[in-house]
Length: 320
Length: 260
Image (tube, rainbow over all chains, first blue to last red; front, side, top):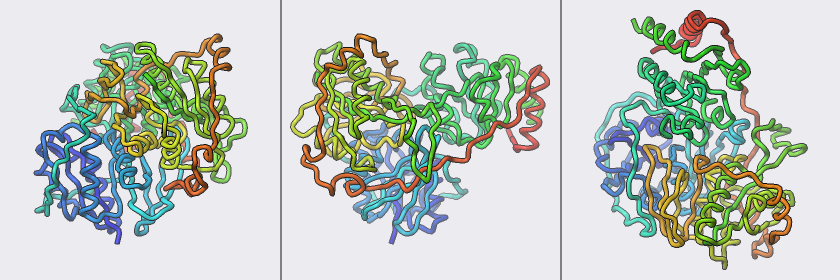
């Protein structure tokens, strides 16, 4: 009997949307699912996991788990797998997930399939589709040997349903010591109350065409007015105009919103690889030859500094 | 400081990639060092320039991989190991097992490599290797500091900010391309690369049998490659922004159902 263990993710003590997507997916496939909740002061989230269909919720709640720690988190997943008898482990393909997934797989002596965008499941036979070659291609993969299936799934690949908390059946896990060779000291957080890039349905993003921090700050309020997350190209982040937390791209955050507005972004390959999953792409760029226009559903050739105030006016009209 | 940089040779993803009957077409493909591995080579060179020591490159694959290794040597790496591997499709698990075999009996302070390879974008091999070798790992670093032979401070791009991590060596570290801008090989570097030591090994030299190689040694397999449905250019608006923007937004609302 297949049984999925979903590794839950939280931010500021609340479950993140991709976790709800994974539980909703398991439910839609009629798969038995349990979950693992790791963090600091996260125990209250167990009931919401239960509401989303989690059977038992394995909880590891400790100050030392607030910041991601490979060794501690890997040990906890192994512990939860052992106790739950899970045959599959599903992890979101976030920065945490990208580090955790292969370590867990290797710990358990099995392989992994990462950054999956489509899953076909027949018991524990899994065929997974995942992007490769900077999303220029997709590959269809499967597990070839018996054993635990470890998979990481892209945020936004599946939809989360609506659900409410129900009383959870929780199991407390003992907190591992961690690897003494690694000291997770601190986390430098840039800003915290903004909409997360990989959960937003609209992203407003800026590129080199903004010319600097001031140019980026000129566009940023539009994101707030649209209820959008604010993103930036790698060039903008590397130049120090915007913090890296905003970076959209293969080495930034991969996003798949309903609408992606690209202001002054030319469309470098690794950037396109990070947003080509958007449903609708709108590009605003002075350069009619910019590669981004080849993938834009709506392309505005023009000066972003002139366009932004007009956008703001139009958005205000829509809201009223 | 002794650093080994496993590198992957990949098709140049900036160019057109073709698929025929579910397989990637290699004919006429331009092969390059995977971009994140170039970042790792640069990082390793900077570290040995500061602390002394040598940078060794490791490549696994067919004959053509030696060209990628020479390019890395031309950047300034000191020596290379080529595991001549022609056993067909292998997954990250299989690659990591081969790398672990190479590491047996060799002592490196640091295994430094790209966070993922540009062909698979899987990002699995380095962490699996770290587990097989029982080494600590830190992935996706954007900066390092307090460099010493027995440890350093690493800055990792995490989900909620930059994670600051102290690590004791030996360890496995993977890099994000924000770490540095890789140097270009000079003419002199290219000439010198030809004379730098390149050790050639076969899987049987490593004591690996057929059951540990190719599909037999893998845990997953690729059934086929496909081109995804490509996006086509949609509508273009040119002219005065006070006219084009409202027109575009009107279409976004009516056609694409934009709601704010």
